[in-house]
Image (tube, rainbow, N blue to C red; front, top):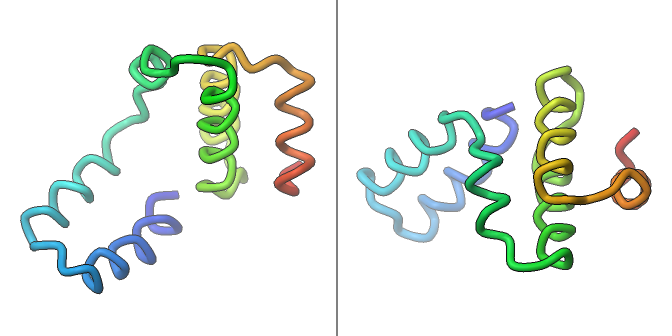
Length: 95
C-alpha cells in the first residue's frame, strides 16, 4: 500500500523543494501503523469525520484484508455509520 501512495507523493515533494531530511521524515511517518485513536480524537465533528474517512478511502486501494480492517476500525472510531460508509464506498467506486 505504501508504494502506491508514496511514489507520486515523494515525486511531488521533490518538485516542491522538500529537503532530504524532510523527505525522510515523511517516509518514516508513512511507514508507521495508522493511529486511528489519535485521528479520531482530533476530529471536531461528523462532517470532518466523513471527510477523513473519504480521504482515507480515496488514498488507498482497498484490496487487502488489512486495508478493509483499517477502514472498518476508522469508521467505528470516527462514528461513521454503516449507511454513510456504504454511500462513501459507492461514491468513490470502491466495492
